[in-house]
Length: 228
Image (cartoon, rainbow, N blue to C red; front, top):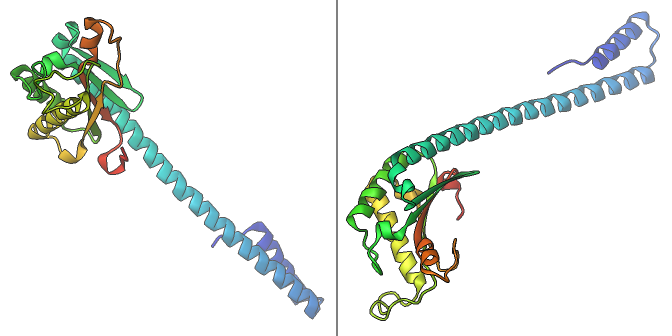
């Protein structure tokens, strides 16, 4: 326990008064009360200092961990860009760096046959390459399926009544292949967005083609802390 200047002065005052014999019982008791109060206050302040130091250490650790995650995500972003240069050049893939992650926008034409949910050979190969770049990340991976607003064809409607089911099945297929490629399944989330998050107009075929996509979104929070 630390001793403050105030306590030292009070102790000296008590000692001098006792040695000189000029202290009354009431004065001594008053000085003792002041000393006890000062000691109690000193103890409280010491505990507050210890608590603040502990909180500061925890905050510094959290900042360091966050900085480490940012560095790791930046490296992953650069590796993905390097790995997928050819697909990006043809417009089949777009890669966007987010504040807390990375988004890959992959054209469904690269991944699936028209109206199908099984990955074609090029799509399976592509997802395998993406998985290699995401294997060491302490992050959560969301796979979102998107469609245009055109109603499912009659021949497929029994299996996929709406675009919700089609988009969900495609997202689930990509998640399965990521898992088969070695990614921890607890990191993976499959989400259907259907036709309700377009990035282009559905009024022409070019826009509808852009809206038929699968997005792979890497978030920096580890799976244990993700609530989505």
